[in-house]
Amino acid sequence: MYAIVEIAGQQFKVTKDLKVYVNRLTNEEGSKVSFDKVLLLDDNGNVSLGAPVIEGASVEAKVLQHLKGDKVIVFKKKRRKGYKKRNGHRQYLTQIVIEGITATGAKKAAPKKAAAEVATEEEAPKAKKAAKAKKEDTQE
Image (cartoon, rainbow, N blue to C red; front, top):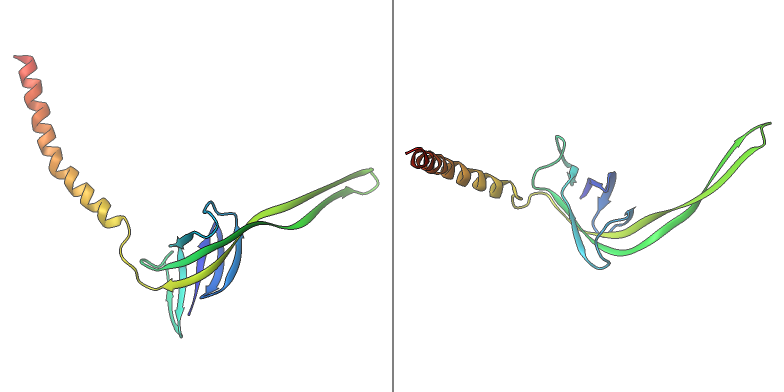
């Protein structure tokens, strides 16, 4: 079973127990993190493709360490002009290990939001009536 998941703006093909270097995450070392942007899921030949993501699917991972990548030298030159610039860069990375891939999970915050919207719709007529009554009291 493998999945293609978006982590920190980049897409990775991940399997269980795979170690991956990703752009620096804000989570602490040893903490668990879940990624919900699963774009493709392959379960022994049964391929599920998201549009753009698969609802309910997630990838769980554990942060192993934060580190810096290898130095990349950026060298700029314009010939016959005497222009040379040398610069270096080391990318901040996080090493994670994939602990599991879940194809279907519990609904996230969407049902809670819908319940909150229903509650506000019920309260809205009451609030309008109260405001109308208050307005009538102030006019008298």
